[in-house]
Image 1 (cartoon, protein in one colour):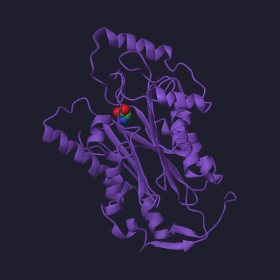
Image 2: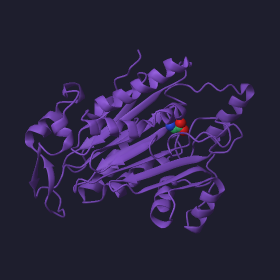
Image 3: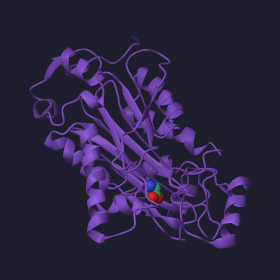
Image 4: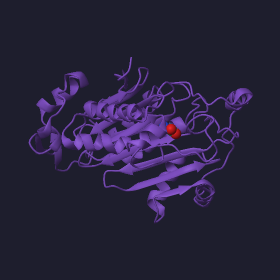
Length: 344
Ligand code: GLY
């Protein structure tokens, strides 16, 4: 085990750890004593088991990197930021950062937010020319009296903070946009053009939680459109005493139910991460039915991590995956989990 700053903290009992390892399906739907963290916790000098979880297959790389940082005693906030930045810098990922698909006018505009276990928050939306909008959101959190900057103001702040500016539109995304313009038909392809966000959550060896969410948003969106990802509550929520959640998919639907906050609130009631995500998806579906709205182009997925290290996820439709890694083994390989879905 690497050297760590050891001090008294709450850790899981072995029986809870075994329950966690048995998988989401085996976890009881509601476990108030476990979720409250009172009845099943003991004071220990042991480091807390580090965990990192992220949306989609690209989470395999980002959680691995974050976990390595956590094993060196890094904070959940630092580790998660390091993870998502990997995805932002990858021009092959066409829904996040550099290489993201543009809006209908050909501008790549990025959204991101972050939150820590204390309730510190930062957010940016509609930012052009800045690859690492996750770090920009963190700079808003740490270096301004505000929690959210948008558009040109956010870009100006990035310049002032020394962030490099560059064109984010790669030739592949430009070609897709030019093809899209032939019809200008707004029907995002589920799990591809809606495969749109990296949300990542981590718990560090001190038991602190943090999360980041970063995206280029819906492909070919209207200029100025903002989705759920930069919004604290819909796209991301962290309560250090309860757990953390983040969302991916059709942002308009996630905003309608304040999705990630809802997941954390369900965990606070005692529901497991898996069940909490399921309940949020069910609420979104109930809203669709109430509004008699079309659901055919929509995918939504949530992932969650509770303060005891349990993880879960749930989606509206099949196809959503998350990556998760935990434990004290250096260079541990994350697992890719196919998420259960409400609809066939
Ligand atoms: N979930 C990302 C977006 O809707 O923009």
